[in-house]
Length: 350
Image 1 (tube, rainbow, N blue to C red):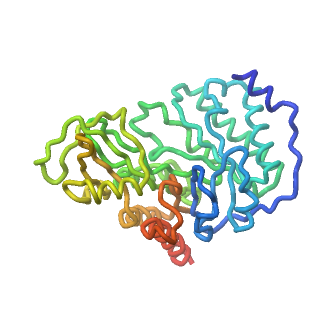
Image 2: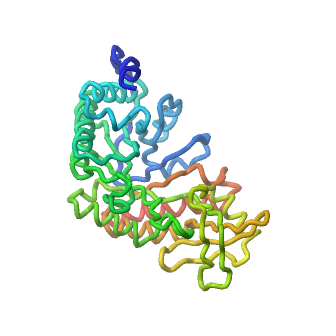
Image 3: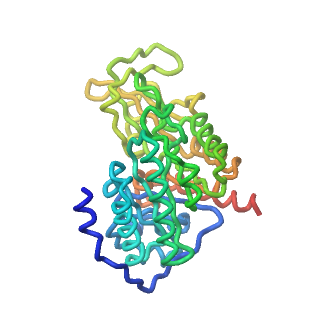
């Protein structure tokens, strides 16, 4: 991988073009899309959006006052090679080339994978520092962000996702806390974003000394559908769904809400522990359980972020609800809710 990657980037010097880059906002609404038509989004409710290589929408977003960050994941980042300074230089050149030539407002690291040894963790810090220094050569307002786990030490570090977040944060403008996929229970179906778990995660980042002004809380605009290998329907309040965890699926909120309204044998229920909703269904002879957030349960999580003084809110993903909003009132509620809390936070601060 080292030779192939360097072969792509070496010799490609970035050439600055005239860009309509946008200023950073007082409070962020950070959106992660997949592949929808960007004209469908309520653009006035977004401040920053992540895009991948080859994006054709940067000019459109800039015209609507939205900042665009270039997403760098794995590939091309391979943690195995990070100790090689030449490899890191290739990564940095690749980022700079894309940010400069395609008029991105910054870059966002979204490289996930296990790292256990301290040498590689330090090398990752070096990559972030070197990227920051290189981006400053494009301009002083080019931003650098990173998507980070729901907690700085997720699952007691058994997954290898404990990296040197505080050291990397020194060179970052924004850490997007992925306040989801926090399940530590692989036996029964459960919430992806329990309020108590993501609150602890936010507080642990703050305890590391990372400024609250750098933290944005991302929430789940999606559902998890769990296949139940056993369900006792007589327990109260939650029929425990013993799951085949390897076959859980992420699902759109529209599919989930349709199935919960038409196939749920116990209605849509609120779980007091996680501040999340769920429903249990029987489809094609099989039991399933779906866990997801509504605009109302998300409001509880937005309030938590604002009460901790965080710099913004965001979601994964804005493409897992139905569009256009004019004919999908529930989808509109998801956008209206996050916009209301974002605007309310600015009023509160001022």
